[in-house]
Image 1 (cartoon, helix red, strand yellow):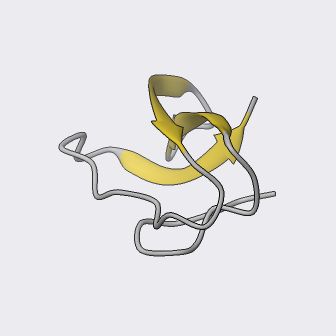
Image 2 (cartoon, rainbow, N blue to C red; image 1 turned 30 degrees about the horizontal axis):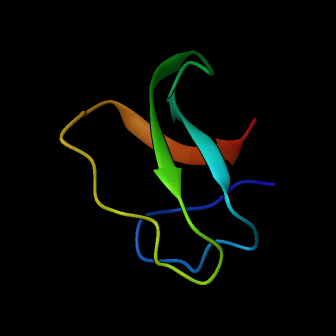
Length: 50
């Protein structure tokens, strides 16, 4: 499931930050119901839960 900054996390977990080339370029821990945070990584395309 692809999520973007500002969307609500469907479950608690560690989300991978995925760049435009499909590579993991970071991670962020988000609790269920919280919004996916913005990222400082300019290449970030979306987030995926591990």
